[in-house]
Amino acid sequence: MSNATQNQAAAPAVDLALSYPSPLKEFWQGFAHNKGAVAGLIFVIVIVSCALFAPVLAPYSPIEQYRDHLLTPPSWQAGGNLQFLFGTDELGRDILSRLIHGARLSLFIGLMSVLMALVPGVVLGLLAAFFPKVLGSSIMRLMDIMMALPSLLLAVAIMAILGPGLTNAMIAIATVSLPAYVRLTRASAMTELNRDYVVASRVAGAGLFRLMFVTVLPNCMAPLIVHATMSFSSAILEIAALGFLGLGVQPPTPEWGTMLASARDYIESAWWVVTLPGLTILLSVLAINLMGDGLRDALDPKLKRAA
Image 1: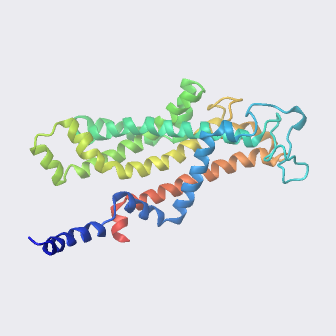
Image 2: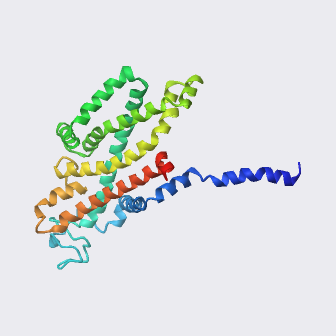
Image 3: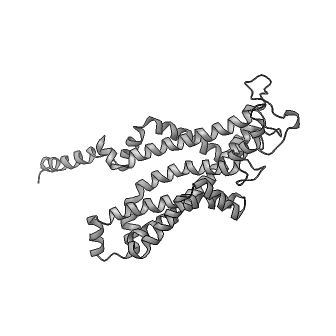
């Protein structure tokens, strides 16, 4: 065969390869189409960077007290001090340093709570889908009972039994989030069980473990990733609520909810002590939710077809 003929045969293959972008590039195009998601991602990167490099970025120790600067206003307000950019709290601790170190703890609790709910939720959801008569009804009735209780009330009840503390707070939040993962995994898996590729895997002799975690689970990950992102923001809110009630992280450890709880007596006299931690929680949760919307747009094939 001549070189010209070979080039003509290879040309359509090259054109075909160029016409289809890589999965990563296609994902980023779908994500970047949502401008709010990109803004949320940038803010989340800033918060995560502050959490990772808190000892370097924080100007002071989060528990160090400056008795000569109690309730100092922010530097841009009358009476403020450039030494303390966001002011100080009722004990003379630098608020900016406590917010930076609090990001480390709040994000860690949120991440661990999501993982502690995601892993057992996926396993229980797959068991409920693969064994609908033996295990499905029992698992789903238990999840229905848990979902019938208000999430914050259930978390407070668990904390009242286990006691306040970091580990117990993560267990409580993970337990509250568990039913949503179980139901979502079960619904997605039952949809996939009717697909031809699952039937073909069964005929080929694939074992139960391979069917559950290799064949079916990867095709259920898109909604799980989106839900995990959304529940990450919910976990931050819930740990802040538990900290505000005195059941979460205990003082003097810096955590956004605990900072709100200790500052509630100074709402009128020192607005910055309450407003700045609350605004940090608000912006962080909003950014994560916007990022979750972008993930949904990028991962949902129905939205891709609609576009």
